[in-house]
Image (cartoon, rainbow, N blue to C red; front, side, top):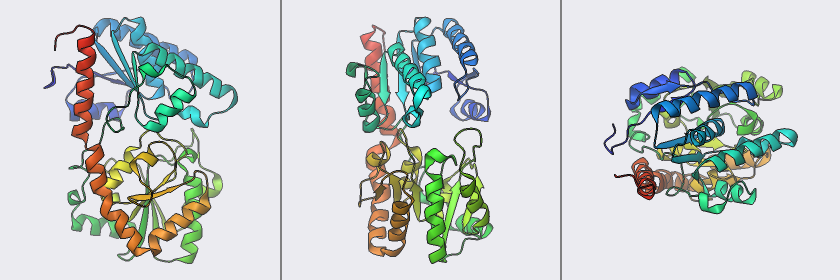
Length: 365
């Protein structure tokens, strides 16, 4: 039972992340296998398993995140008679889909929202996109606070959390010199994140300037949306590109970097951009929903068009060469995140939303 009087159960596919939630959050967890791809037979089994779980646990609220958990959670909860069914939209893969796949994903999205009692896009851009595509009636939609699914713990993501000695040691291990200007990307290394364009832009810049590094923090995914072979070759053969794979704690990598480069094609409300800002980094981000709400052009970062390596190159070059501009962005970065997205603020607004919905359904609080 939480301090607010809620008994919380976490449900997800089996894996280390689910075990970590159990240990770190101190809540019981239950694994239900859910694929990330379109797999009708497996999806039906997931739906049946979740329906049975709802019948057993008899929850008052089911709150789902991610498209697959959304359709399984919302439809399963509706069939089981769960009174309050909430779905947070934190990114839509269908934005990049075409043809028959897009039609299937559109249908699933509409069915998810139809099954939910409330839908929470975690950015203004997603809110507008959902309405434009007529996925659901406006009365079901609401943005929590200023956006974001969970806010950010700015005490945890703070430059003070990574001591100078740790930074020196990490730079030594990665062969980064003190006068190197370091661009960092954090996330899955896939095409939809703009990695092909980022690597192309950096490769050009690194031929012109010797004291720069590109730090890639995240796993390669060869099964879903893989990188182009040319990009993989550039990563392997450019000594100024450093790929460190998945890292559970990304704070040390932010601490040794100068700028976050995040040229993603689509996002909901990217935690990475908030994390970087809280660590005091300005960002280069795509002009897409979420990113263009966290970053204000010329204030705490640079906003660029998607899928354009030339504008990435220009933005990276400006960050390096215009010292006054860079210092201004850096000075604003952390303060702007703390003022709008501090985690406790988001949690309090979400708790207030839960309590309001419970009152509407006649539950005593």
